[in-house]
Amino acid sequence: MSLRRRSLLFGGLAGFAGGSVLLRHAFAATQMPHNLDAHPKFVSTPFTLGVASGDPESDGFVLWTRLAPTPLEEAGGMVLKPVLVNWEISENETMSRVVARGQAIAHPELAHSVHVEVAGLKAARPYWYRFSIAEYQSPIGRAQTLPAAGAPVERVRFAAAGCQHYEEGHYTAWRAISQEPVDFVYHYGDYIYEGKDSGPGYRKMNGQPFKVLRRHMGPECYSLDEYRRRYAQYKTDADLQAAHAATSWFVSFDDHEVDNNWAGDTDQDHTPEEVFLFRRAVAMQAYYEHMPLRRKSQPNGCHMQIYRNAQYGDLLNVFVLDTRQYRSDQAYGDKDGPQGEDVWAPDRSMMGTEQEQWLFNGLAQSGTRWNLLAHQVMMLNLGHRKSDSSPLSYSMDQWSGYLYSRKRLLEFVQAHCPGNVVNVTGDAHRHFAGDLLVNADDKKPASVEFLATSITSGSDGVGDDDAFSQSVRRENPWLKATTDKRGYVLCDVGRDHWRGDLKVVDQVMQPDGVTSTYASFVTERGQPGLQKA
Image (cartoon, rainbow, N blue to C red; front, side, top):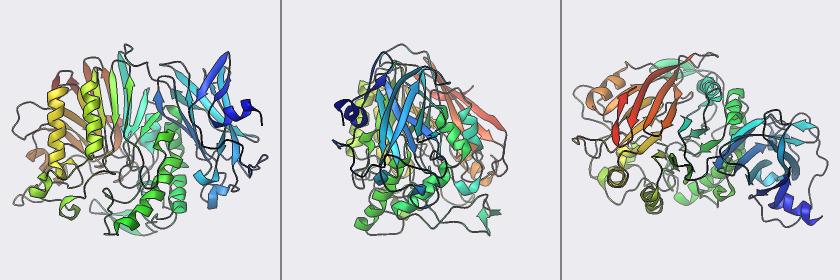
């Protein structure tokens, strides 16, 4: 094999009209695999799971696909040999102005997924891409490079979403997001749910009988094959594929990519740590295989480097956090309860020492107009009462169960970046928007938070006048809005104002639900606090 061919395949220069584009992604191989299937054949298109791009930088991004002609069958219907996949990037959506092309190896060890890291492109512009193999072509996707660091930027728009339980509704919100003119999508986690098939009968949801819309295939996920099949089942959804193809994503996992409410090295079933870590390792491998992530996020055993940052010119610094791998186990057996001594214990952490210091250093050195903290669970400290006579109760799985970590972070924000930090989170299956106070009696917030409701988890929901909504509004004056409906948050970031729209879908148990804006809030740079737009 020629040197040119080897560099193209393993991380050198890709073909480029009028120059060269650098491929950063390279496996350790120094020659073609001996078992390469040079003439693969497929019973149908192998691009059944769509395409995606992610982790954009000012000169490139990651391109992703996974070959799976029969995605729910063993190995996705693939022969267990590596194959070459062609890719190309164009400056227009008709793919008539190709500026880069190359080949990548889809390895069976990674479920025939492909992660192409492209660099050397122009900053602050869209590109279109596709893959091909044999006689098949993938759908065309759109990716977008970031503005150069420090370059003047007037506006950035993005959508935040997650919690997409396959059994509990149509992905109508993803279709709506695919049609939004956004620069990127932040997926806060719960891309899949690991639980078993709910069966054909009814179960309770919101106190009412509920029958699943579409059923999980198989048992609860424990093995690599089971996680792979679950991702494949979710990714066959056309609305989710459309959102991936529409723009570049930043992704992070929460709990259900592994197991409900896992924390660090522990799960909810009291499994021995050394045993649970086997499950965590295969779950993270499957996550990497199905996400447009860079090689630096490739799992090393049961660990995955997922916290990272990106910069949009001089306007926005994006810090994607990881509040699962390094956190202490939840207090009080992970049951809602009062905020006692354990919740305030200084030896309990939400992010871990190393990540916290990385974030503090990044915020202290940030010179952008705004800083986004994109993380998984609610930072608002919201208490509620189960009855008028019961004590205030708080979630132990959110930052309200890690008050020492919460206080440290908000005090740092208040001291070093007052008025330019916005938190965007999820996991709670309802919209929340509010002010973040260090102490409950503070007169001025340290920051603000937009929490995006779920795509489907919770099904159609009950609106905003249920008992929980009434209690949480009454007990927490810093809460500005909440509703139990499905949807996403749309953020529009200008140089002096940040607007968040709480988007809702009227129903997800029926297709083609109507999307509308439930509420909109604005925070002004230098003056933290949400005001109605």
